[in-house]
Amino acid sequence: MKIGIIGAGFVGSATAFSLIMTGTAHKIVLIDTNQAKAEAEAEDISHAAPFANAGKVISGSYDDLHNAGIVIVTAGANQKPGESRTDLLARNVKIFENIIPQVAKHAPQCIMIIATNPVDIMTEVALKLSGFNQERVIGSGTVLDTARFRTLLGQKFGISTKSVHADVLGEHGDSEVLIWKSAEAGTLTLEEYAQSLNQKLDAIDRDEITDGVVNAAYKIIAGKGYTNYGIAGALTHICRAISNNEHAILTVSSHHNEFAGVRDICLSLPTVINREGVFHVIKPKLSEEEQIDLKDSADKMKTFTQKALELIV
Image (cartoon, rainbow, N blue to C red; front, top):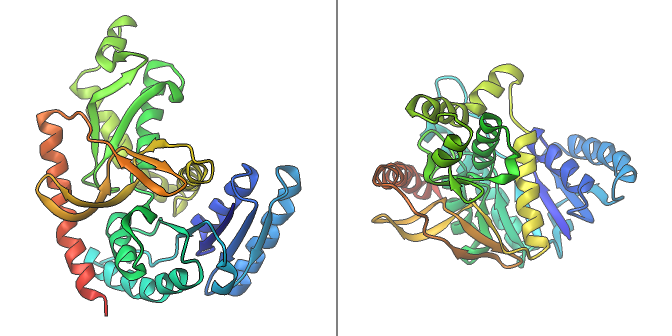
């Protein structure tokens, strides 16, 4: 599949590398306002391609998105010290006003994946600016957060991350909700599995894991200044589900006409993804506390989503 990536920074370039090395894309078009940066990244990644699947990587313009099956948007501004979330939104909405119509014009049949933060709100902005149907505009959502959750649970119990079934839903951000009620290892609840090992899983353990998931990005940014490999893996996972028509269940962010009494909001729920984008959204089993927390997450995002949409010229 041909995949376009808008933004050749840390996330965009790492994603291009991941897509090529896994064979998920046969051709990648990197587009950036810094053309020299896009050209350098494309050339560097193309030198690695022969060691894997020999896909083609080029730098280009929006014209080169013709026939792209997927376009990933990673471009956007970073929050500055002292800058409010609303200020960041204003700058990213402005950037999207330039990017999204160009993508819609040159790749009108593509599925658009948004990775720009705040991702849930920017997914709703992209949906409005593109004019696409809501099944074809997807945010990376909590796919990465879910992977972080499963990683920590796997480490605690000494089992493969792939054998843990647990999701993070809601916002990709501080109000995200770890879903403990339906979390399983095999066919056992986490509590049952812990008991089978003569281990415990108490409130202290849960708080420690929750902190590790919610604050993972802050910890990584404090050490290296940015995050890129985890989100690149998440974006590759989403692209693979689309290109292979997998009908995989992923916690992507997408538009919901109504959720918990909140109308027209993008947030992450378990979602079946295939070649057409969003195929089906699953209503998860939640505890009463999780229901309340998800409602609070949706309410918070709705406030900022309305502000972002009002900024569109």
